Length: 105
Image (cartoon, rainbow, N blue to C red; front, side, top):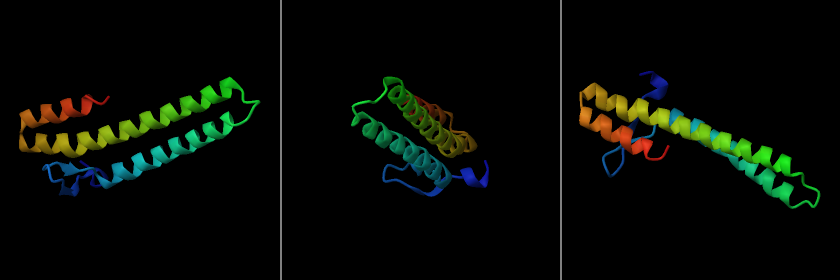
């Protein structure tokens, strides 16, 4: 595990490790991009002469940004939580962490 992917040294009230800082920053950046695209779409739709394909293109860009953010969060989860469980040799925890993450993919 690299230093940039190390788990944040905190834990939640439920005992889970916090999301690594690098993953949080990258996910936040991708979500900011998605927000910008959504704002652009809303402005486009306020115009009478909006071209449908342009709107669809922007919607696809939002979907890509959201998918990228999901990938970043999933990777952070795998590197922080699953890898930590693997280092402990806790195979039950590995499976539980993977199943929990995959529920949302």
